[in-house]
Image (cartoon, rainbow, N blue to C red; front, side):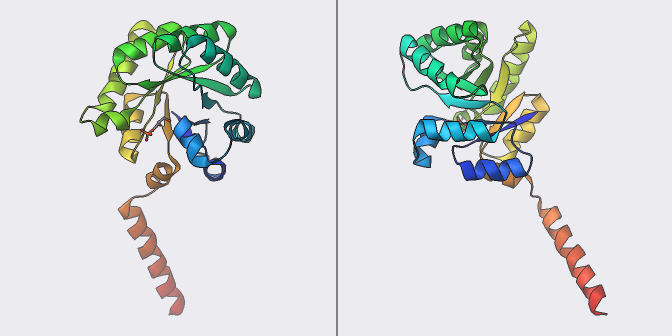
Length: 215
Ligand code: G3P
């Protein structure tokens, strides 16, 4: 299972890289805005930090503008993946990018049929948003299981990228389902290292060690 980091903060990417947690990076317009830095500058810097795929999202909603924008983004580095929102024009753009050999990540996917359309257009990756589905009382991880099954049924090559991850439990479930990739906020990556028994175990080992030294 591949781990992407879901951030536009270079400092977080560096920390995650040091820990071996970065097979790629995903950004979105909200994360770029939060970084407070110009879009192209951030993407260029991130694409140099890792050789893994770096998703950069188009802003246009018209196919021809998406294609223009995505083609420019793809020129930044050869590990750029053009992120395209799920919509009719988006599918035109993904089909074109596929023909051009440009990798794509179809984002804002909330149903099996959306994932089916994205795969048929040739999307390299498809991003179902689990947290946002859970937020409205729906079953985010159930959608992941269904998409993984559907892609297996037809041998689609698109990778399932679990997005909108809120907790380590999402990662556990994604791994058990067999999702290809999860994009994870740095805070959740940190939470994944912890367990109350690990903490108490470290503390008691240290306490016993220190007691023995003072004897
Ligand atoms: O990058 C897309 C996705 O991971 C966004 O997550 O937390 O804004 O629902 P969130």
